[in-house]
Length: 280
Ligand SMILES: Nc1ncnc2c1ncn2[C@@H]1O[C@H](COP(=O)(O)OP(=O)(O)OP(=O)(O)O)[C@@H](O)[C@H]1O
Ligand SMILES: [Mg+2]
Image (cartoon, rainbow, N blue to C red; front, side, top):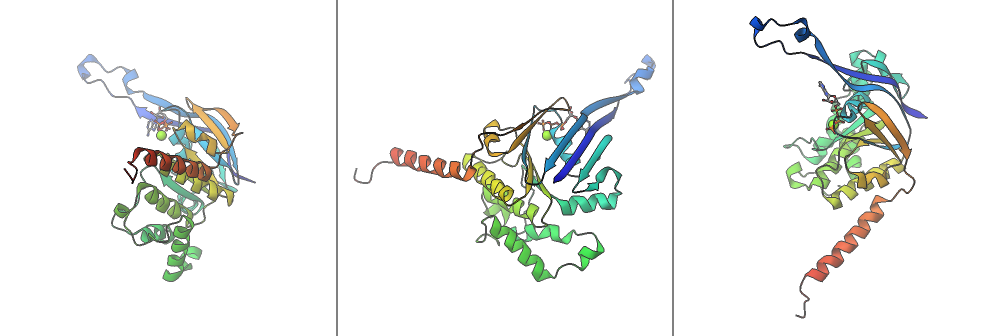
């Protein structure tokens, strides 16, 4: 089933042109015209339940613009976007916010965790933002806590629930962010360069976690600049100058947990070889 259906999506930014600095020079009518940046020029795109899609393309090609629209943080200038059967372009702002809070889990490059708040409290946060009456009646404090604990267990952080972000590694912080994205059981996860701040080992860990969530049926859409990660996705779309120029299936898909195990093994061998032997 299509969880996402985009047709003819355009996004134009109108920039008011700067007026002449010297009014006496006579600002021509051109100076007052708006400059239009065509960030997306008519994108058709759909994603199925259980898709795992990488969005790639050069800087300025429209990736973040597309993610903002997918995430209901922004509306297109033209075109239609249907998410989980809801036509978002026609929704009022309340519905728009509802969709954003309940249907989408966000993961960012910089984790975006609250610093003075424990891992558990960070993950509980989205459960407070339920907007609709039927949701507000919702859950007791203990039920919320239970849900957040389950989400943290699912990302392997059962022993770190009371840690503050500063007491966690980068990879662990990103796992907290993923637990937070998952706690509302969203229709899909949007990740904007989630491994951008992580080293090889942590990147593989995060890719493994995404693969696991994806195996459980979660749809994942992720922007990355790292071509070497492409082998872990199922599908890759490429943007160029605001147009979708390719959409390919990954044929030789790899398992990130397997690659992580190999990486750790090789790393251990290397450090064994470089450390002085005990008998010496
Ligand atoms: N708020 C804005 N106002 C005006 N122009 C914008 C705005 N946001 C983005 N643009 C322009 O739209 C185009 C697409 O930008 P976008 O941020 O989507 O690129 P990107 O593919 O995410 O690039 P990067 O890889 O550098 O993050 C760029 O030319 C950019 O300058
Ligand atoms: Mg961007």
